[in-house]
Structure formats: structure tokens, C-alpha cells
Image (cartoon, rainbow, N blue to C red; front, side):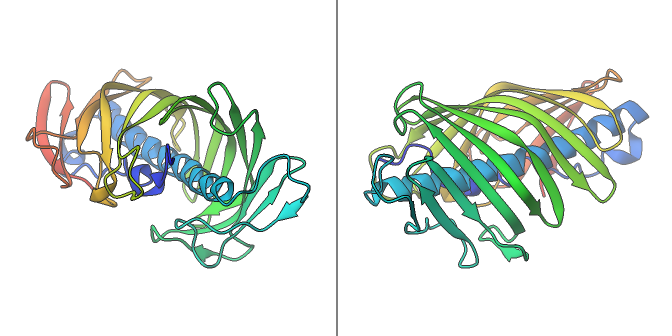
Length: 282
């Protein structure tokens, strides 16, 4: 059973927001809050993509009959449907390490982004058993020529539900480095028993904090769980509300379902200093 699968379709673009018309009338703290929201989007998007590549590949690997106690030390399992042709996967059944390798040259992935380097996942405990976990690290890993570092601990909480703790994540952009930490829970709410991924739906809860590329600290709180539908492909969340606050005192709230329809569109509303307007997401 696939519990948490294909999340690169779910969250990799999920928070890449473009605040249309906000910058012209914003004060400096609000500007910084908007920049923090964009940097949070970039960090969260890629760290979630890292998890999605791992999760889809681990599911494919274990479904193929390769177990942690096999005599085979190193095998190349069937690749998951999320990995592009230019990526490879390998499983070390003695060390219980899954490696996804995008190569040393830029590899164009199915979300249209280029990646290179390795995702390395060290398993502890029986796969997807409650309280078992996986430590995910990155080796010379780049997305769109931006180096991404940091670690993720994935703890399985039950069928379709995981906790993801990200520590010391950093994204080196051309205009500065973003640092980011988060504690999230992702729960699959639909599609648990069907073979297709296209009816899958997920909700995301938790909090995050970081420092944007200009050195401004910020916190992120999910006020209402964020919902994603795989059928929406690269569209943003279909519902949910989050708040971003920077250390200058500015607060920005994003509502991903201003019409109350949970439609696969790119509409959201943004509230800054008590004023709300509808925007189109990138």
C-alpha cells in the first residue's frame, strides 16, 4: 500500500507564491514578510521534493521484494515513476541505505526543475512500521544550480501518516543563503486503498522557522490544515491558511481557498496589516 507517494506533485511548487501588486504600497517590514514567504516557499518546496523522491522510490524498492535482510548487498531496484531517466536508484540491504543519484550533471526532472547530486536514506526499524524512521541526507545536491543542504528525519506514525523533522536546511541562492527548519505532519486522507495516485489527497500541519536571504528571521504557522490534491498536478494547495511573521513585526496570512470551492486554480487571498486582496500564485 502506498502511504505517502508522489509528493513532488503535491508540495514542490506548493508555496512558490508571487504577491501581485503588494510591493508597491508595502512598508519595509511588509516587504520583508513577503520576501520571507517566498524564501520559505523555496526551502519547503525542495525539502518536500527530496522526501517525495525518497518515498516513491522506497515504496517501489520494497514492493519489488527487496528486503533489508536479503543476502544481496547492493542492487539496482526498479525506478519509481517519479524519477527521470537520468537518475538511478540503488539499495544496500546490509547497511539498509537507499541512494537516489541524479548524477554529476544537471538532470531534468518531471517537475521541470534540474537536479544533480544524491539523496541518501538510512532506514531504522521495519519499513513503515509505527515509530520506525528514516534519516535522509544530501550529498552535493543541487536544484536549479542552487546547493541544498540539511537533514530530514521521517517518522512513520500510522497508515498514511508521517512526521517530518527538517533541521539545518540551507539553500544557497544567487542573492543570498536561506536557512530553514520545520516540524510537519503529512497525512494521506484519500486514495489509501487504490492503485492509482491520481485520487490521492493529503493534508499538511505544523510549523517552520528560518532566516531569509537578507538575514531577516521569520516563523511560519499553519492555522488551518493545507490540502493538496494530486489530480491538480502542479497547482497549489486547494485549501488551508498559513501565517508568516518576520522579526520586524510584519504578519502576512495566506488563504488558499478564498472562494471556498477547493478548486484546482491558482487563486489565493493575502491579508497584510488587516487588508485582504485576491492574488494569483506563480
